[in-house]
Image 1: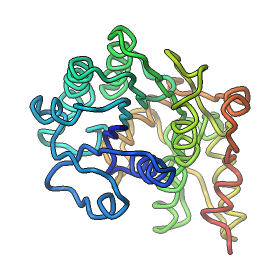
Image 2 (image 1 turned 45 degrees about the vertical axis):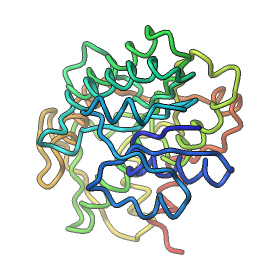
Image 3 (image 1 turned 180 degrees about the vertical axis):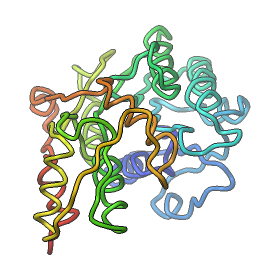
Length: 286
């Protein structure tokens, strides 16, 4: 049986549904305040608990073969801080997994995250990845680039709903690696029984491009004259969550650069969604 931690999120939800569609037994760690009706209707076994509560994690891990974690506290706030969820919570999860005899953990972090990063989320996720590597558990650590749903559809889409100017933190010509959430879910499922995924760190990118290119593609797709306004690092774009501005500043300073992973796609049989195709899919006319 698989335990998915983070199943109420976008990526975790997609992974859960696909596992269930393939006939896998799936338990999901969910809080009692979450809307779990879609997961329950899909056939998931519900384990009510929280990464901050050792007793619930210990119970959730019983009888589990693999853990897949996509959970983060980056956008929650309050008690669900990055320190409490991404670092301390996952440290507890690792201990419970070892105690319960779990065979393997698949953990999603990001390319460019390291323990020396100026961004707390990056440090916490990198620290958790290190803890997993040294835990004695079999593992796969996935390191995708920037999610296109967040870093194209949201950060640009939200702005063009208000006007024709797109604010970009850093140099608009700087290139970044981007990946679709669906492709990250593809990789998770492809690595579950793949021998080359054992005790491996696997990066994933759908392609690299700049915000200047992205805005030009969107302008053509929606037939509007869009302008770009460049902001210096550490700027705050009004209306965006603090973690978005913080990560964008980090990326614009070189923390998350361009990346190509064609060999990964080939090895795991992935049909990658390219950034330009994603833009056409999201912003293009049907």
